[in-house]
Image (cartoon, rainbow, N blue to C red; front, side, top):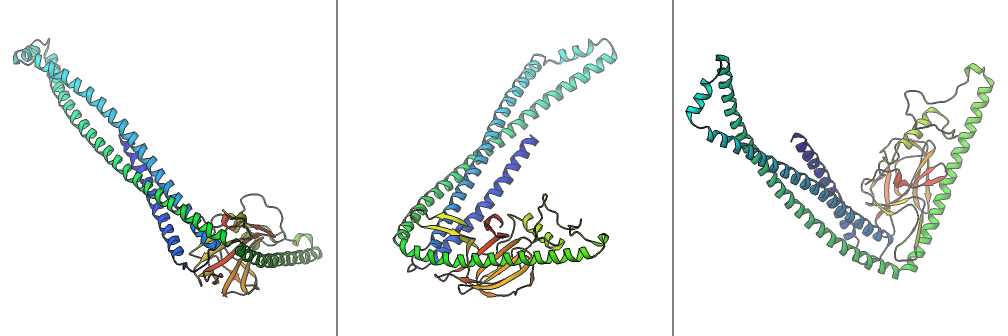
Length: 418
């Protein structure tokens, strides 16, 4: 019984977690709906608007899945309660049958003469004492039987009430899920209608995307030049240190390695020219150990364009991004996602840009309206770098890029999941 209650409590806690998660998703949907409402009707259909609609759809699916998980938990509880009710009913039937036999026996031997005869026919005084103890225990046994019947009936009644409550809860969850499915169908229609509007602007959007690709190529070349410059600087430094080491006695040469107090890598590491000191290696290892757990560069963030090559549904349009375009509030604080050194503050197509080196890793923050750091500055995780600029529609937007040396990787894989 104790184990059963523990399982029920565990399931109840899990349901609380699910309900909390659902409230968070619903809050995200409300924010996306508000962001969509803020886009005035006279604005032309854009890819960033489509991304908002698609994200809202994904969140709606997440709500429905969440409700489905909750229903599974309730079904498991109903199954457990049904099984417990069956067990208690069988137990109650057995107790009643046993009690009926004791009552029948007591009725047949109800006269005081039979009782006295049972005592006086004892073979000795000790035997008489044992017979008295037997009669007392027999009476106690009947009392215990009656108490067990009452207790079992009470437990059975509680389980039946709980089962009724579970079924009502399941009905509510099912109603909510059906309601969410209706909304989902409406949002699918909304998306289809929007894609139709987008398709009507396909040629115009293709020109906009071509201009964007041109800017991104400039940014890509600038980042590649920065990385190359850092590698060359590290190589020159390594050569100078090697010459100095060769001029000194062998006993005084040093081999820069991680000390026991520093951040340890998850596995063996290949030599990398950019990890040329224990301090730099520590930052590099810390960055990669935080893969999937780095903070977003802005507090309020929505991915308007994902990483890599993607076909826009319902059109012939194809996006190809070196990072992720993050929609936020215009003028929002843009912060460093990890500690490092600012390698460059520069302008690309009229937008201010910052690139930070984290060992062999680099992060770039493009389309800033203001900049709060300078080249060579050391920054900490969460430190303010500048303010977010705007896109052509006047909405707040930045491009966030992550590199492993010259290789561009998907930033979303490094950031905390939202």
